[in-house]
Amino acid sequence: MPETGGYLDRVYDVDTPEAMRVFYDDWAETYDAELAANGFGSPARVAAALARFSPDRDAPVLDFACGTGLSGAALVQEGFGCIDGVDISEGMLAQARRKGIYRRLWRMKPGGAIGAEPGVYAAITAVAAISPGAAPADLIAPLIDLLPRCGLFALTLNDYAIEQGYLDPIDGAVAQGECELLMRERGGHFPTIGLGSTVLVLRRL
Ligand SMILES: C[S@@+](CC[C@H](N)C(=O)[O-])C[C@H]1O[C@@H](n2cnc3c(N)ncnc32)[C@H](O)[C@@H]1O
Image (cartoon, rainbow, N blue to C red; front, side):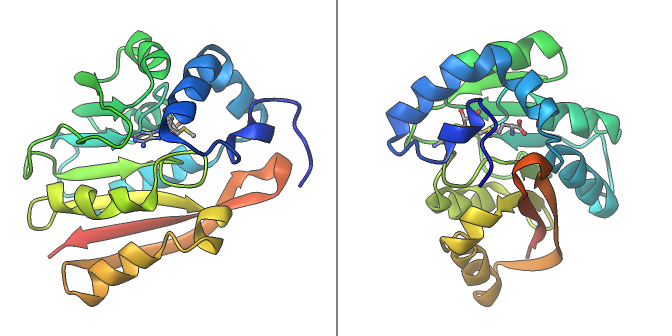
């Protein structure tokens, strides 16, 4: 894997939840510039995928692990008008707050409750949010549980996550009849390091 000289070289090796929070707090101020320089493609791909299946772009969306708000900004570009965000890093949330695009932002504890009421959000996004170097795969089931019937879950899983079995909870939810898979499409995540991601859109049944 080519090196970028930035935080991206190290993020996939951060292991404990507390180390993750500290890592993202440190990265927050330079995160947007570094990701732009690496051609971060996933936010726009998820927002376009969600727009394709959303009947109402004014319905509330929860941007899980919203970071500095690049994922929320992509949703705004697609016409979504009511976006809340949650993250573990106060540094990342401070940058997201500055963008002025979220209705509400809050911090959750690493490994703690997400802090949203079930049934409130018509859609949940998780962009570059569930993977090695971000939230664990065991958050997929509780995120699906937050959705009302017909609610949409649009997320990316990068190539590392797929290699490490992060699809299993999604396959499980589909096999159990909790969700249907509307879309699955691999594309560019960080072209500079040759890393792809798969966009998945699920509908709660
Ligand atoms: C690569 S960033 C993605 C941020 C944003 N969605 C984007 O598209 O730029 C991963 C985010 O996951 C957050 N994170 C890491 N572990 C988490 C956890 N256990 N629960 C919630 N968020 C977490 C980090 O603080 C960071 O903001």
